[in-house]
Image (tube, rainbow, N blue to C red; front, side, top):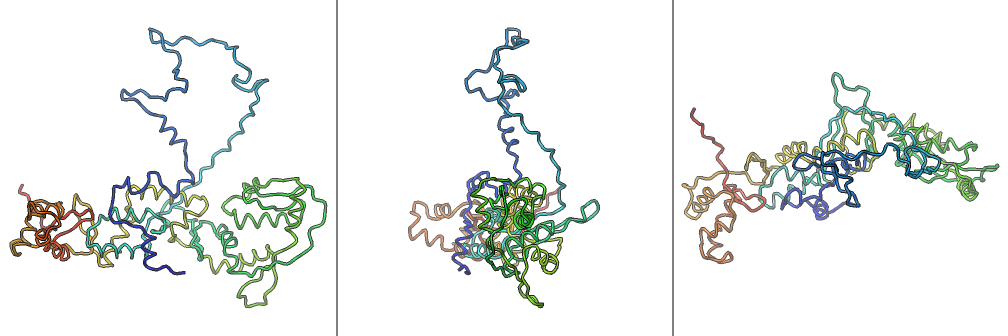
Length: 467
């Protein structure tokens, strides 16, 4: 169902009344933090603190005892050469009374080569239109960096653009494969085929269930996937390998076959064996949609082979550039490509450079204006700044312009206090004195910023200093 413009405005939630960055978003919010995070580094930094004199300040022990103090010469008392008062379970290494099991050896870490991919962020078109309408209705100037940060605050507001780097020393065997249905992105064609067979199979095949007899034979165990909880069947059953390959290709294609094989456990409970038999009383039959040849029934291996050979070449094309919605990228399983996007998000969250570069031409195309002020800070507004010479204006307008020229960054209350001293802000005299201000803002002779401060635009001419 299509959303109305009011619903779009509520979904964007881009409040243009900016607050400090530390108060706008809770600290530590990162949509990519649960993939490949190393919490040990954070803990190490947390405990590695130093006192002002340079010594390491370690946290005190729970019992409040920091150990024996050094003697008068700065030496600690010697330790006993042979401690025999320990219990067997406190000795170093396994002993006769040690009940602890030896730790398993860690597998050697395999360094995955980094992909040569450039990541940038662009605003979502519909959300961009909502923000432009808000800027036009307010007639205020907003900092471009804060507007870009607001887009980055929600994954529905921006897209991720991926581009492969080409050149000397770059990997030439990497390609991007994107799903045409949900815009998921992969670097391997086989992984994308497994994704499409898992989530978009109904778009290419008609699936029908047929009732059959349960398998007969003496089965003593049944295999079950630890990740999904589905039963694969006994290892001596002829359909075990078929079911194993189906689960791996459709749901766990991002894992190696050897790693996924370790996730299969063998159970000997009779009720689980009976449950598997009942699940085999129905089988799925696949028929190709839209085929010119006569439609025939296929089992799962035949349907997978048919999709790989006849359908995949026409719907899966390699590319060197792709645009992925941010919420789709967050839902994808962990991969080197997602790690690259996570690192780019960290960098963009500190300073949204790529979003600012994408917003500049988009704002100009939608007839908004960009200017710099307040220490080379870029602002966006719907009114073109146009300076006005106070000497060519009437008296009430001249008074406002001269006061703003002498007091840049003031607010309406300051102007009212200067023009109408000892008058309440809601009085008729103050309203008449501030009436030219609205016209000056609409014409661009006065710039009103997002926080209510006022300033007159500069003429753009810089005086040349003499040597």
